[in-house]
Image (cartoon, rainbow, N blue to C red):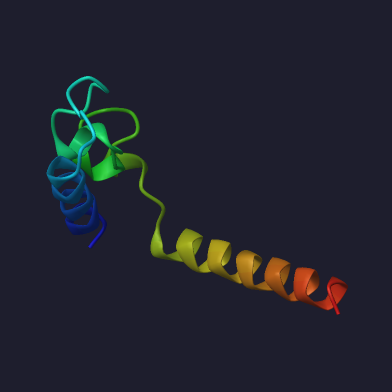
Length: 73
């Protein structure tokens, strides 16, 4: 899904009056790179978080948001 959003954004920008080539943007990957773009590199898919790590990070974010929401009330 993220790759599709990047592709769509690139083509929307190409249709605008923005000079992408002058900004050094020649492909969708120039907008933002994802770890799965280069699986052989250090930041590639070998370093993607496990399902357990993802669940832990999501729990931490939920807890953080609960604390922030309580402070704002």
